[in-house]
Amino acid sequence: MFTDLEVIPLKVSLRHSGLVLLVLGTMGSAPLVAQSTKTGDRVMIPVLQSSDKELGVQAAEAIRSQLQKQTNIRDLVVVPKADIENSLRSSGYSTTEALAPGDAKALATLVRAPQYVDGTVTKTPTGYKIDSRLIISRDMTKAQVLPSAQGSKLDDAANQVAKSIRDARRQLGDEETCHNMVAQGKYPEAIAAARKGLAGYPNANILGDCLAEAYNAQKQTDSVIAVAERVRASDPRNVPALKLLAEAYGTKNDIPKRLEVLGQLAASDPSNIRLIQDVVADMARLGHPELAVPLMRDLMQNNPGDPQLLNLAWLVYLNAASTDTVTATRTNAYQSAINVGTEMVRVDTAMATADYYSRLAAAYLAINQAQKASEVAALAARKYPNDCNIQLFNAQGLYKAGQLQQAEDAAKKAVACNPKNAQGYFLLATIQSALNKSDDLAITLQTARTNGADPGALSQLALKAGSDAYKAATASKEIADYQKAIKFLQLSDQLQSSADAKFLIGASAFSVGQTATISANEKRSCDLARTARDAFNLASINLPAGGQKYPNEAAQLLTAIPQFTPAVDNEVKRFCK
Image 1: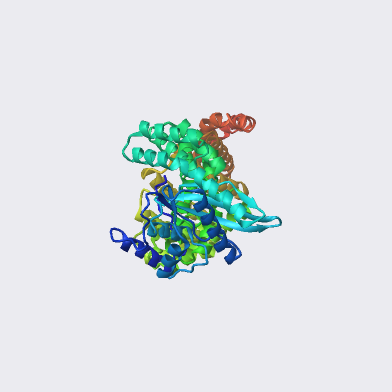
Image 2: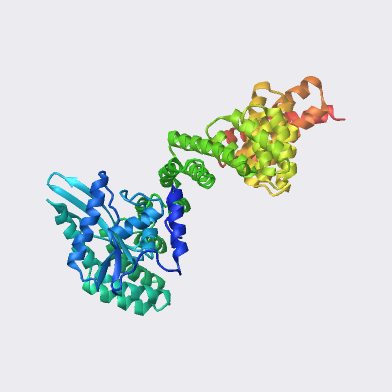
């Protein structure tokens, strides 16, 4: 899921760009900063974060001073304050403000420091507190959290930090070996180097990251989790450990743990857009897009008008809405998606694709704004006349808006565009049923079946049409109305046999027979007599099967049929000569 990405600050200033260019320009050329003739590594202590600018500058210098006192220049060179400030000035940076993470890495590269410190300093009621991390310049995500340092004097706290830096650096030789072995694919050697270093400094997080990477390369998932969880416990912002944990819990299909780690990963570096995008996409894939919504909200607030972020937010909000079971929050999510989508196509008109319009119309339908959905779908239908899905959404929008005749015309276009689109047939049938176009409805259902639509679903549509017609016939008592019901009920039974359809066929046929028997005698009609005979035969065939679900009602009708048979036979003899 995750790749080794450079942290990309949300807002990259021109000064930052200048610093990066200056770093690139000096690679392979004479260094801009005078190098020590000693052999020790260089470590950079830049200005610390603080609400008091002067305190941030003073704390950094205090740590430099204490670290120089505690170390031999042959073992460690502390980059002097003057070298740091000269490099900052040449790049147009303030010498009294703390650097953003990406800027600090660039500066460390510029002054040839393999390690640097990032931290904050605050005044407390009893003195000063410094929280800091030792970071390796080749990968700014790999850092050692140093113990929080407090003292009544700034030098006291700085002295503790300096000692912690010395302790933390004990892992670096073995970490470099481990790193090189991993790069060469020599994983057992990498593991051995890491274990050797951890024996001397058990809390080594930078080395722990490398050990977890080696285990991961060998697919030792349980070992990855054990090591990465130890690192996470001491450093909840450790990006490499969190990435490996997310992958490991994914391998073990532990979704709750994976989601927990993903949330922590996003919080570890909220300025890293690509990292947040990966987290958001993973949350959506895991079926929990709602967890990504607050992440996207913060990203968009910090990066207004970014087309890629708007597109991601559009999809996240839609997915979150579709999975939400609470009406109020689902409506809010759809409305947020609509707002973001509208802004997205305003910023980048190329985003206004057929798929965009389809999703937008569906979002409006989901929050019962049928008129808006209809307007969107109509616009899309004009813009993409050959897109079958757009034609279908247009029909749906018109139907929801109550414009039934226009909806039928649009639905016919949709099924003509794609004769295999079952959803189009269902919509057309629903519209024709609402328009009471029974003949057209019957044709649509049969055509849909021919084109592969689900016979069960079609059967239910026909059953509903037959049931509605039966209810209308019981009110009118007209033979034609009962026969209309029988037509749809028989179609339903042909599509998928059911006790409901068979019982209603039998009940409708009985009513036809009963009415026709009386009318035949009054009108002395052969046709009505034969209609009565055929209807009672149809009822006798279907009622037994319908009785499986409606036993009492079917039994009553079956008992009544023989009472009519003699009269019907007599009418046929008398009137059909």
